[in-house]
Length: 286
Image 1 (cartoon, helix red, strand yellow):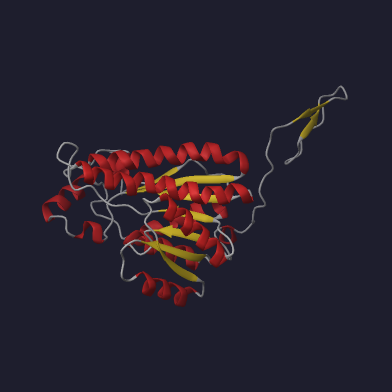
Image 2 (cartoon, rainbow, N blue to C red):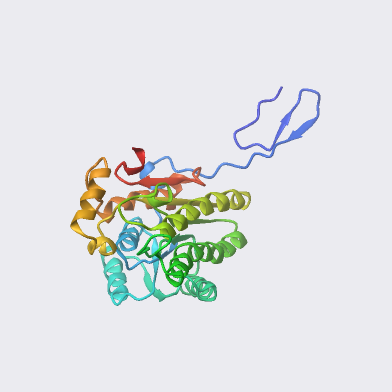
């Protein structure tokens, strides 16, 4: 019986007949692990790219050679941050004001990026806002706004980019989910946020299965407590309870997330899809 070759599409069965394999071909892999992580010439959209986590993601991917399209909503510093990244790493950056809860705006933003950069390789759907109350105390209009940005917005970004990716036969989407999609963390009450992030995790898994047939990949990262402006106004007592429930007894510097996103964005992760990388100091391991 003829042994199948590594990327072969058929095998002899010993009787002169041929069986057709459904096996997909392997990608071309760099032997150097450092080269695997390079993103030279690729274009990345990062939503919420002027925020604490988004900005550090942008810096990490730019350092690996990617050109960065920063999407923001209200930031007054987006252009300056983009200029800093460009100067530090010698790559192209451009900013776009996009309301991710508006699908027409998202679709236009993707079209604009492809026009300005000539290509799109990676969408990082990172924009999100927190819930300020529990499920019974949250105002319905606040629930709808959080859901529209955190869940609908994530889907809209994946959809608009995914249509480009499917047409070109490749592309990579990475969601920012949360450990709150795995656990109802305390003492803050945030049912809407938790539910949205759990939905994002399953959205990533579902799209990963659908996109695989044409060469697309979808994954997500679930951060724990991160030292950013969003958590800066939280009371001392609340943060102390967070630390008591986190095995590493601290929150994270947003730079501690960069490597997870770089792995998922790069060719180091070509066999990784439908995955969720939890970076939470051990919170959900308890």
